[in-house]
Every structure is written in C-alpha cells, then in structure tokens.
Image (cartoon, rainbow, N blue to C red; front, top):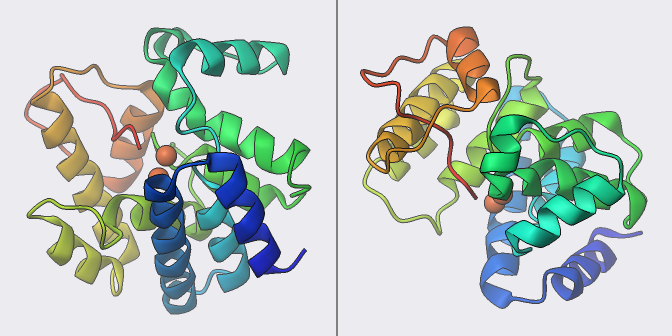
Length: 198
Ligand SMILES: [Fe+2]
Ligand SMILES: [Fe+2]
C-alpha cells in the first residue's frame, strides 16, 4: 500500500476531518524528527498517520473492542478508557491495515502515556503527537524547537508540560507515565498527574 492509499483508508476509518488533519500533521512532524534523530522516516510517517485510529471511539467501545481482542486492560485503563485508544490503534493498524513492523506498532501503542522503555521512534511519535503545529498552548513552539535538536531533553520537558497540564485537571498518574518520568528525569511538584489524552 502506498502512503497515499494509506492516508485515504485512515481518513475513511477516522471519519472526521479535524482528527484526520491532526494525523497528517503528526505524520509530517514525525517524519521530520525521525530524519534528524536517526530513526526510519517512513516508519515514523506511517506511525503518525495510524496513531489515532481509535481516538474517536466511546469509552464503551474502547473497552469492548479491547476485551474482544483479548488485550490486557489495567486498572488505570479501566478507570480512564480514553488511554486505551493508543494500544487499540496499534492493534487496528496490525489487524485492519496489515502493519507488521513491531517498531511502528510500539510507537503507536506508547504515544499517549509514554513508557519506561522507549525507542527513538517511540519518542519521535510521542513528541510529534504532543507538539504538532495544530496544537495551541504557549509551551508548544519552544518544545517543538527543542524536539528538533535534543530528543531526551524534549521528552523530559514535554512530559513535565503534560504533567503540569493534567495536574491542573486533578488526574492521576498512569504507571507507564511514571516509568517514563524516571527514565527521562522528569519531575513534578504534585502527584496528581497523567499524560495527555490525545
Ligand atoms: Fe492519541
Ligand atoms: Fe494524536
């Protein structure tokens, strides 16, 4: 399947222009970051296009589809089903779009909460998702600039930014994000934290 064909299929699957356009911007930014940081640009582009396949599913559908597919659902995920869109999107990329590359599937699965073990490609997609130019918050531009030159530094700062945002919403810390904080040396002054839900 060519990338153009992939885009058409993703656009149809998602069924909403706003979300599809986010995927286009994430794919473009991930491809560029991959070039800079020595990951495979095509894998980054494909992961960016596919990362939010399940983002518009209801909580009920996320839980039901993960259960039908035999996926493990943690207590945190059961309490906050929106975060399941990341592993479910990876599963849909595999089963519905024929993606077999484990690096691409890993990046999709980790794009929301991050993880204690992250490849360069995983980091590239996490950053592209959070820092693509369509997102509108004051820290975005300096973080995006940092992502283009310092991958671990941008991971640390971006995780800290999402922690600040979510602590303001009184959301709890996901275990995967806590593990990523330790790996990248991210700090927060409050425990009321989790990652972006997008
Ligand atoms: Fe997402
Ligand atoms: Fe996204």
